[in-house]
Length: 204
View 1 (cartoon, rainbow, N blue to C red):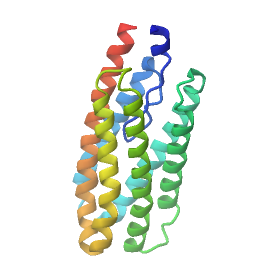
View 2 (view 1 turned 120 degrees about the vertical axis):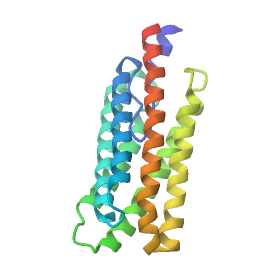
View 3 (view 1 turned 60 degrees about the vertical axis):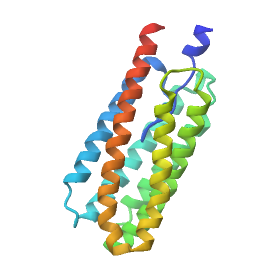
């Protein structure tokens, strides 16, 4: 039974949690990077929304790459997370690439288009995190953190089009603060989940 639990892949956070418990360091690193990203988001001048958009695009790209890596590393664990992680990775890389390779658009057009793409990615991430939390509720303690992370991602994905399309000019300013708060909270949850995974790994 213990061996079966040990082989369960874990998925969650703004980056993949499909790594195995002994590799909880990936989750911790992701949480620290996410917190740093949130702090940078608050420090970026509100007028520099274009730079903020590119920064989030780079983050989505990195999350996608790490999701693919986690999927490959956990492929032989029979945890059932391979394809969800691949889907998350592809969506993250696609959204990030779209943002990063279209610098020719005007700042406003780029931000509106980019954040629409990132809203889709955020909603997909939230759904996958909620599904993982439900599946793992009997496997690990603290699965509520994964579920809360999913709800936050869903909330961001829903809020983006409401704020952005409701009043694009004001929405661009609001986006910077929104993503900063989101990243900080998400990063803290990831760090807490990483510590829970480390505890499980030490008990194994």
